Length: 220
Ligand code: SF4
Image (cartoon, rainbow, N blue to C red; front, side, top):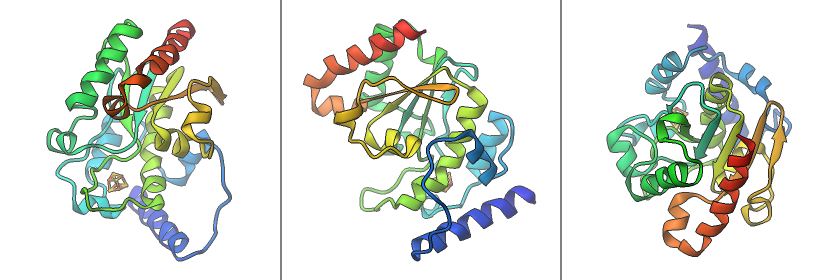
């Protein structure tokens, strides 16, 4: 009941924010943000809570909640932005050609397997192609991601694409400016790079990602 009460309270606060109320100041990624929502202290229970989540409008259009997966004690965590249709159908993150590219990045550059890392997204529910995703939905769902980070406690977080970096850090630098930078935030190192789906459309940027992942490999 306490979880439900907190979830409803958070939803109400975001509705007020959408109406123009300012009830909080801009903050950087902080482990203390966990206090916004009392979420379970195990990934299994957290996943179960997300499966039953109706905190934002994306719950109406999803087929399945796409929760993070991988090694619960991973040193490296990849964070994307939004689940695609194929992921919504299968209930797993990073499938299809983008998923294959991510797997190749993990295996060929880091020398790890997908099972050795943890992979998640900012949003756990797939928006329809016609559906505009509001800032409040990213902020609401971020509570699950922050708890995943706290529970997995990775040494290095690789954000894929501008949205993932922006919503994780609250830093408004463009990805072009910040990509490949090693950023120490509290207990974690964050390294922003391009999203595999972007690389599918812009293969000439693969060499930049290769360089970024080489930096990660040195840090491991
Ligand atoms: S996107 Fe996140 S906050 Fe919105 S319904 Fe899905 S799990 Fe809940």
